[in-house]
Structures are given as structure tokens and as C-alpha cells.
Length: 89
Image 1: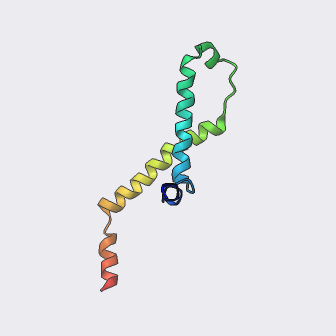
Image 2: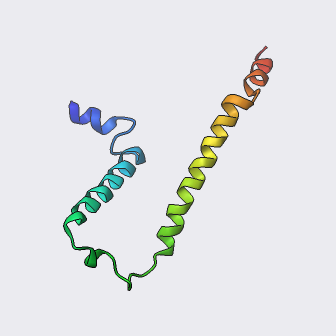
Image 3: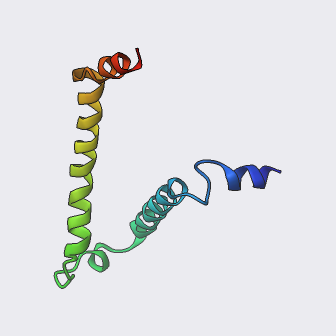
């Protein structure tokens, strides 16, 4: 039954809410595994630039900041709740 509860959980393996953090942890584990490698094998002048990864990594904080600002504006600077309650009456 525990495996069924895990499988059907709202943040279980059938959802992105499970896999996104799982893959991020895999990246952290890979970075820790590289701690024992000599720096010369990690840092290379001939490394190719991955502009796709750079742009995705740069866009992530921008989009998160925008979403958080939307939430803050709604929660603290909006009278949306008053408008909804006026329509209910």
C-alpha cells in the first residue's frame, strides 16, 4: 500500500513536481563527484559554449521573479477580492 500511496501522491513520480527536483539532485551529486577530479580536467580553454544552457539558466531567475512579483501584487496591492465579493451579492 505504501508504494501505491507514493505512486498516486500529488507530487509523486507521475508528475513534474517529482522529477524536476530529482534531476536537480542528480546534478548536485555529479558536481560533488567532480570534487575529486583535478581542476585541469574540469577547466578547459577549449570548452565549447553552450548558449542554450546559458539562456535557459539566465531566463529561470527572470521568470521566477516575474511570477513572484505577480503574486505579491495580487496579495498586497489588489482589490480583486472586493470585486469578486461584489459580484457574489
